[in-house]
Image (tube, rainbow, N blue to C red; front, side, top):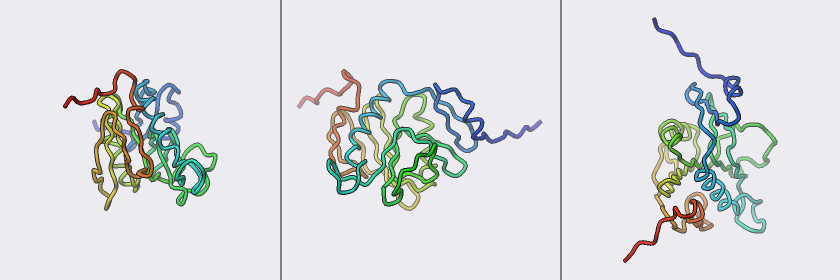
Length: 196
């Protein structure tokens, strides 16, 4: 007997306990544990490095022009996603409203990978971000200390670069400020300098 599965609803998502992150991808309710310390540190440090962009354009302390948020809830078509970080250019989102979720796709998304989320982020969420025309995607892996940078061109992700360890990086769309990747990782986990 064929039993049709019903698509998950927002009400289903609201029933998920607070200690889990809940998303709806292609009609399926997906839950993940809250981030562990390596994941949380990487997200926080990246948010700090992106801070100069999260100011008014022309303001003090950075180039400005962006809204940068931690774990915003995105309602994109039938899908509900919660990236680790997301950013909107202020020219597209002039005023940040006090709302529980956003229906406007961000211009930049950063997913910090973990053993429980890496496959979902790469296989399930990455194509949804492309469908919704998110301009830039970062995939950060604290376990191997890497940053992968993608730009959307013609509806397809183009690999712009990969960085690792303790590099100083200027990564799209935030090339105006160098970011110190050594600050993204737990102490004692930074790569040792290569021997010549």
